[in-house]
Every structure is written in C-alpha cells, then in structure tokens.
Picture 1: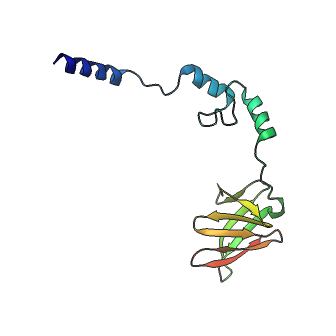
Picture 2: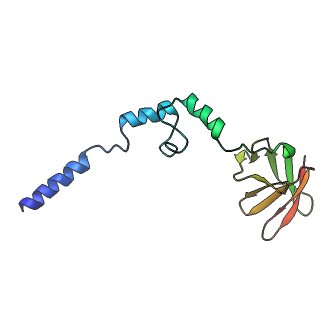
Picture 3: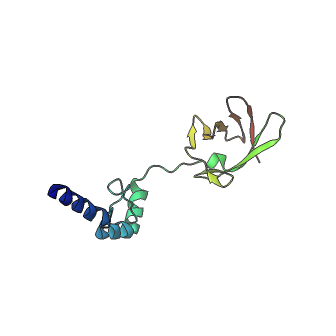
Length: 142
C-alpha cells in the first residue's frame, strides 16, 4: 500500500509540474541568432547574431535558382485554347494564385514544376506544355 501511495504521489508531482521543452537561455539564444531548433547545428549558429548567420548563409548557402529566361506571366491553356491557370515567374520563384510552387527547377533547358497532379514544362522561347494522367495542353508567355 505504501509503495502504491509513493508511486501515485510521484506521478502526481510530475503531472502538475510545468513542462518546458527548452530552457529560457536556449530560447533567448534562438531568438537572438534567428535560428530555430531545426536549423540549430545545421548551418545556423546560436552563438552568432541574425546578421552574422544571414551573411554566412549567403556565402555558403545553396545556389539560388535563376529562372531569368522564363520571367513573366504564363497561361496554361486547355485543348480548346481556354485559359485554365496563370503562373508568375520571377528570377527566383514560380507562383500560381499567389502561392509559391515548390520544387521548381531548370532541367535540360526547361523550367519544370508540378502543381497537384499536373506537370508543367516551360521553354525560354515563351511556350511550353502541361500534362496530367488524363489531359494535356499548351502554355504560353503572356
């Protein structure tokens, strides 16, 4: 009975004590450095300032995408020539409906990316194509 009481008392003490995932000092270091728990130790140093980490990231960071030949507004068209969607390409990003398209890349002279089930291929000449498992169409720079 005494064992059960001590176990219950210990468990209750653990449950009512506040749970802190990180220490206050570590949280302050993360804020000062601009790092997160994920990036700490992965290219971000919590002992440096935000500016120092930003400068280090520019020097050693991955190459920034260069979509310069594809910059502009593009329209995807169905087989009847009707506009389905519009894409905006900047030097470093591709957006549709205000949302950033992930994993856009230049491969074999084409800018390729996916939006849901559709795959898009843009050529620097101002045209391209899109394809799903059941449909396909053209793309043109507007």
